[in-house]
Amino acid sequence: MSTPSGTLQTKARLRVSTKAKTFVLDTNVLLHDPQSIFKFDDNNLVIPVEVLEELDAIKSEQSTERGRNARTVHRILSQLLPDSRAMHEGVDLPTGGTLSVIINRYLLDGETSPSIQRFRSVLPDLLKKDNRIIACALFVKDTFPPPTILVTKDVNVALKARAVGLEAQDYLNDKVPVDDEDLGYHTISLSIYEMQRFASEGQIEFEGDGLKDLLLNDYVLLKTPEGKTMPGRYGGAGLVRRLRLPDHVQAPGGIPIRPKNLEQQFFMDALLDDSLSLVTCYGKAGTGKTLLSTACALQQIREEHSRYDGVSISRPVIALGKEIGFLPGALEEKMKPWLQPYYDALEVLIPSKPPKEPQFAAKKVGKKKHKDGMAFAAPGVTPVAAGGSSLPPMKPYERLIRSGVVEIEALCFIRGRSIARRFFILDEAQQLTPHEVKTIITRISEGSKIVLIGDPAQIDNPYVDSRSNGLVYCRNKMRGHALAAHVKLSKGERSKLAELAADLL
Image (cartoon, rainbow, N blue to C red):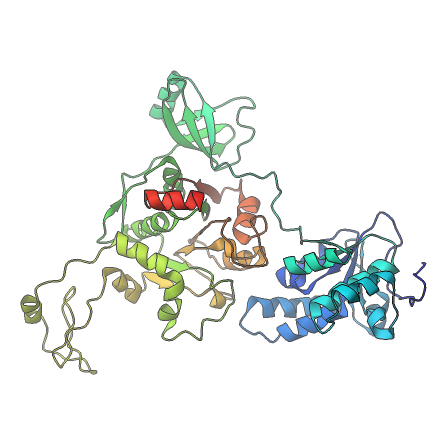
């Protein structure tokens, strides 16, 4: 193997093959997917020693997903590289490729090359780990024949790498294909007589390849040349079944909620179907994701023979694993800023009753006093303190939370749990990585249902995008399975102003 003039020969076992590529992994790739080491087929993998140092600093994060992933990577590397010789010479991977941990000899021995000189002039600060990882990738590029590519989920690192002449790309293994466009639902043409038969029998069977693009549980709109339409769901084997929805859904003591458009009918059907354990939903702001999912969950809880004991609601605190301990109060109070949309939805579904006149409310206050000086009040009556001052009345939905029917979940504490007989709603799921979504879904026990909702166009997590976030990844992998269904909500129903702002701003 030839090396550039003035450089030292490394012992790493990288392939000398023009067909193989050499991928240099950034720390964030390993934290994003600890199993990424085994997902580069028969190519060469290089881990800069600076990455090990960064992983070492992160492994102590006990309650975060990053800390767990860092420890997982350490265990995998310790098994693949059991001794000093394996570390220096590299090892063969089960995929047919090789794995090496590289020390940048340009920095170690003061050697140089045109590429490293250009690097030093552009990025002189070598105290930054990102710059040292880019420098290591340049060393690999100069030293080994195969094309060298830096793999990183940090957009800025990729830009800096390209600025110094190094090819860089995102981790592509868990990205949804570019051509996987979500159309929401399919339209099927049929005659007026077939429509009448479909309406009366509740299902219709199609022959041939007319439904070849449909997968199990895909939603469809049947349409006649005369303009008559009727929604349905594909049941497989050419069979489309009619949706059978209730006139409305209603929370205990709440107001009736009805779907306002076709896509909301699809969503309500998926939410109310006990045969579906997983529902994913895309929708921009104001399309009804939160309100409908909460309403359908509470509707099923109030049924006499409900399969669910309650509703669990959560959303990422920016991203899974971020600490919420700095916020004051109990868990519900800590999570309230992040779950305010659900409190708003509960307020709409179960509006507070007008307060009674003070003179009548006072007569219903019992004589028994609370140990803290609070008199017990009759349900729905404003509590009165011992000193005579009244406290704010308890809102109807707060009683559901107090009783445990509605439960507030913190995602950072979900690992290790087994969630049984719950209707679990996970909002803002597009902020999660595929690995984090897998962690959550694998907590769902028999008899429970999980609903993942979000807007793939609104992402704050710097390490996922519209094609690699957990919501899109889950929909792509689970589509077509009997237990899963997907719905896309396009039409805003919050207000005309909200719809206009969502489309234009």
